[in-house]
Image 1: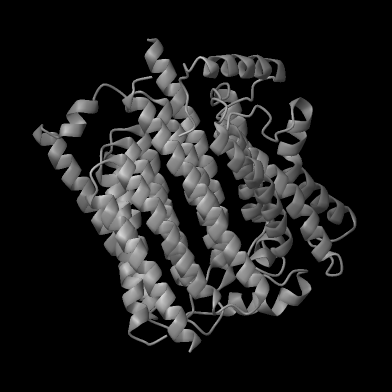
Image 2: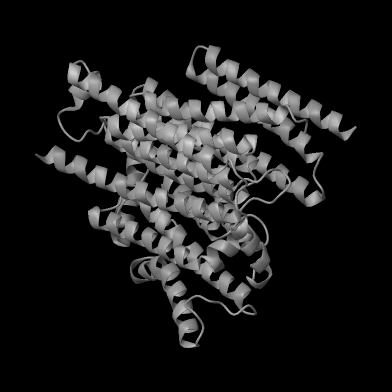
Length: 341
Length: 95
Length: 94
């Protein structure tokens, strides 16, 4: 590629990204804001690809734009009017009072100052040649890590403790969501067009997630991207009005939710009992242990993200069956309230 | 410092400031959640820009792993925030 | 030779995307905009993928790119249908 066109491409890409972020936050219409945010996330994934970060690009497209967008769109759809923390909505929106306008300008100036300080720090930090001690250490130990994708090696071997805690954060978030109420009401059964798409799309998604899990050892991919795609399969089933969306019920659901953290801890403690450091895999077993942990993590992440989309405790099977029959009779008379889009 | 690092790093700072401003000033709870996500995206861009070492050298994988973790944590925080907002809305409607 | 051919394909793909975006901005109502956007964007994507596929190393990568195009085709056709159906319902007042 010629040396002049790449900075031009970068400039155009960054212009669209910053422009989308600005537009998403400048509008007061919630729906427009969310849709622009989804577009922002997708163009951001292109930026990750350009910066040679394909794992991050996959995760951004699947989780950052896809699942976050689905969550936000669902929230926008469920509210008849914008959500505000109190009755001071109008005065802050209009900014008609002098105090309101001054406050907005002060905050804007402070944020600009923050951006300037960070930019100055960045420039200062990179005025000298950066240390490459860590990248050299990672590539030096990659052969003993059990995988050949350096990002997977960092996530699941060199910094496995961080990933364990991240899975715990996911679990905590979904427990909080459980504590806040029941799941959102379902959607009406899909028409023939959407239903036939779902029929072949869901098996392809399941296959793709299995492929991403397997290929994460030597190419971009891994448990997080695979879990997100599996969750997307469940979301698609939910949007098509199905009651069975792949989530296990009752006790099995709790097992699957805890499987990621649980298996991680089990492996770590077993290694501790065998005299090795916590989560210090023996190099001969590292590849298999990583695959085992990643499989459990994938199922756990998928269940957690799908439950997050559901928005609360899933309804019991008997209740779900009654709702489905009620929805079918209701759709026959053409009198629905919820729609898939 | 590479041109790409500088451009993407600066853009990351700008996006982060935009998100922070939106999170502080918007009245609607949902838009504040979107703004916090935008702020997170700015931080990620800063990290990935720092990790980029040019077209020849492979990028530094450690910030990539951190960003991956960050994306997953951000979505779970968003989900919890949306559940809280929904419950808040329900409580406000009752009284 | 391959570079020239793939550049032509990619540029014509981009042209179709541009046409679709202009249609989105200039056409009068929802249905014609959906029509223009879905058709032009999917054709543009097909040409883009054809242009990229010329650079692929083996048959497997070409098949994967083709699968991407088919999946996007089906998904965008379905979502266009859903949007149009919902708009129709809101118009005839259900």
